Length: 178
Image (tube, rainbow, N blue to C red; front, side):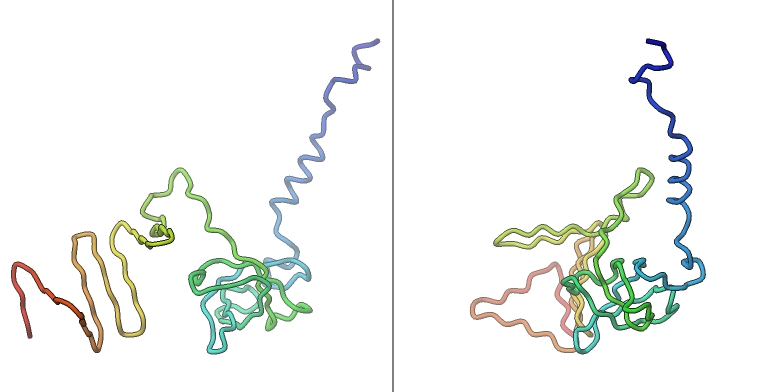
């Protein structure tokens, strides 16, 4: 057997690898001009929900600067607001987006600062723990509760009620009423 006929010598596939790498790095046709390419999903952002609980999507190249109502094939909840979503368009119509998935946040890279991580939430059957490095804010309309790293608890609202069927105690180094 000649050395050139050895079946265990790997074949060179450089040209195929180069072509695949070139395709992987090039944008989809029409993507650079904001055109919709049928069958090609785009990335948008879930902004929230309208009064009928229909999801609202922004950052679509076909509708720059607009928030557009969308249909969806996946269950969405308010906790996902602000996340990137995968969107396709019905019959290529930019006014008819369909959310087909929610993208996971990108993984933390070596150069990223840990402060970019979201607050952590721990849930078990009896307790929910929400943690953050600087502060935690719970907000609904004009009312909010803020917890700071320094130990401050700030409660704001147009009407605040503290009610107890038992003893209601206020303690502090100083108490200021009005």
